[in-house]
Amino acid sequence: MIEFPILSLITFLPIIGVIFIATIDSKSEYAASNAKYVALFVSLVTFLVSLYMYFNFNPNTAEFQFVEEKQWLPGLGISYKMGVDGISVLFVMLATFLTPICILASWDSIKKRVKEYMMAFLILETMMVGMFCSMDMLLFYVFFEAILIPMYLIIGIWGGDNRVYAAFKFFLYTLLGSVLLLIAMLYLYMEMGTTDIQTLMTSEIPLDIQKWLWLAMFASFAVKVPMWPVHTWLPDAHVQAPTAGSVILAGVLLKMGGYGFLRFSIPILPEATAYFADFVFVLSVIAVVYTSMVALVQTDMKKLIAYSSIAHMGFVTLGIFTLNTQGVEGAIFQMLSHGIVSAALFLCVGVVYDRLHTREIDRYGGLVKNMPKYAVAFMIFTMASVGLPVTSGFVGEFLILIGLFQVSTIFTFIAATGVVLGAAYMLLLYKRVVFGEQKNEDVKTMKDLNKREIAIFAPLILLVFWMGVYPSTFLKPIAPSVENLIANYNYSIQPTEMSEEDLIDDELEAEIKEEDTKEID
Image (cartoon, rainbow, N blue to C red; front, side, top):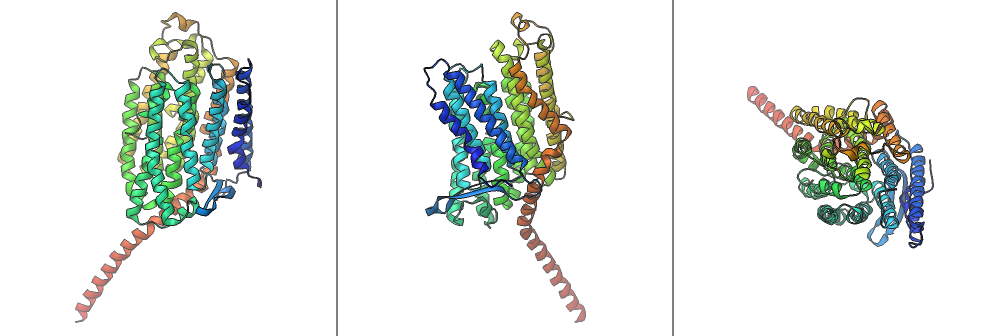
């Protein structure tokens, strides 16, 4: 096992790249090019280090691994504590994998302030990795909130015509929810005297207090997912963000809410989680059906994929709150799959946008004639989004529906309609863009994928099939942590249920004794 602080190395390596880029002379004619190469090199090194960490990760235990702990605020008893388990390790890999892809995707499309753009992405990578590795709630909150700053700048500076509005909406929605998370965190600290996540998981909190804390956390995590009805910031953010911004937003940032439920809501507030599970089911099935129907009528490619992301994340929250092994494992797998597939779909939009500078679906058509490689890549990711067997999208949805069926057949049936609607809007999008007549002359001159774009899509296609054909590679490290989470949850809610059963047994025993006494008399 690795003894040096590898998680801190993975987290802060991108900051070294930021420092290097900051020293580049902006007036130099090679400033932009140098910034790109430094950012790409540092992000690739970060991914390789995270890959080394993953290969040294023990998938047979639910314990946190590579744990680092140093005094941070000794007067308050708060420490800098990092570690990963089976739930978080794959999200770290997802963040480090997508960052170099985002930098490659921005290679030619970003023309202004290239230095600052690359710095923003590397800072964003540090915050994402740090959040998934945090084992202290205050440390988690610092990274969780700091993510807003580079993402706000990426949308607000390098976005579309309405970028300032979208950036402010994104910032205010997420910040408002996070204020309530901060209040819940402060209450836990004042009552328990610690912000250590492992300690909080073993603490006993009265149900009435749990309910209020759960709602405060829910307000923050639901916005990040995003769940209906606090989802309206996402389509605007996606449409206005540059391609790479949409990739990282859909690929990693939307997973922050689901991760928060798994790391905080369920283990720390189990009884409140059981109490509000049906409430989450209702919001989730509304999101799945409603946003799928909204996606059907979209004319903007990015907006359609943005609404599809909300629908897919609705499946994720359904899986998490089934609170059984199949559902939770399916939800985590679906988050990883969605991180790959949605990122790829936004990259597909970026390819045609770079050539024609429009996202309107009706402006395209017949691309298969002059862009066959693009048509094949787009088809693979469309099939994965639909949930076709042997693709990554199938496994997560299948496990979630199995887990949900054990809880409620009604919710399972409603959720299954979302699968049908998802196939409808994605196949319709593919048909309108790739097949049909080439009505516009400029479409006929569009060039197929170049070497850089092929290099971007190749690993994504590999992962889509790898996850679909051999899902145990990803489910194996997840399983022990999920089983431990479910076991602890069941143990936490068991005393209440047992006390009620014991009470009934005592009453029956008292009645039998009373009847026996009467018979003897």
